[in-house]
Amino acid sequence: MSFSFLFIGPFIMGYISTYFSDVDSLKSKAYIIFVPWISIFIFFLITMITKLEGWACWLMVSPLFLLASSIGGYIGAQFRKDKNKKTYVSIAMLLPFLLAPIENQYARKQETFKAYNSIDIHAPAEKIWGLVTRVSKINEADDTGWLNKALGFPRPVEAVLNYEGVGAYRKAIFTNGLAFHETVTAYEHQKKMTFDIKAHPHEIPSTTLDEHVVVGGEFFDVLNGTYELEELGKDHYRLHLYSHFTLNTTFNFYASVWAKWIMKDIQQNILTVEKKRAES
Image (cartoon, rainbow, N blue to C red; front, side, top):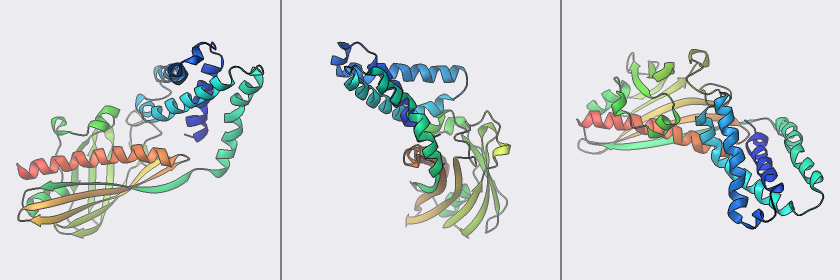
């Protein structure tokens, strides 16, 4: 979970792939770009077979790995004709060891991001709001969260609320033992509900999520969520759902893209279920 590993590592793998290649092969641009990928895919395969990493994590970092390896392959190809091979290879091999300590000095930076979704629903406000505050069991057939399903992440099952108002306790239950403990911090009947979100890592089975993406863990956490019901016309409403989450890595600029996609996929899935039920 460092820039040195996620970029410099595959960069060197690509560099070595072309640096020791036949000079005639390097006349092909396709060779320079794609040959480094072979080492990356072998690396992915070995770590998954040995269960050092899950395929979901590799899927998320693969664009960065493949791009870095191709850049390394290009630079390695440029140096290929130089006679002083050992000097360049030695410098390349030392880069992670030189950069990682420097990176650790600056430590990770915690940043907050927002994921937003909305959906239009043709139904009375009271019917929509009843489905917002409490979500009854969602069958797998009704689950439209394609991204989380593809990544093998837990899917939402139901949400229970003890009462409607500030201070109420709401529990959002997902498959594989994942649960969010929510406390309502702002409430306007049939208009708005905001809740803090807590996930306790010790409650989540180790097989549910990879340690790098576990909610409430070292690198990722969800802070709060908000529902807002906007009237557009008679029995016509727009339901907004947004949440705030934090990332604590040295590459938040990249991790935030995936985190937003994942959060928005979950939220859109829940909104779609609520729309279908309200309009049925």
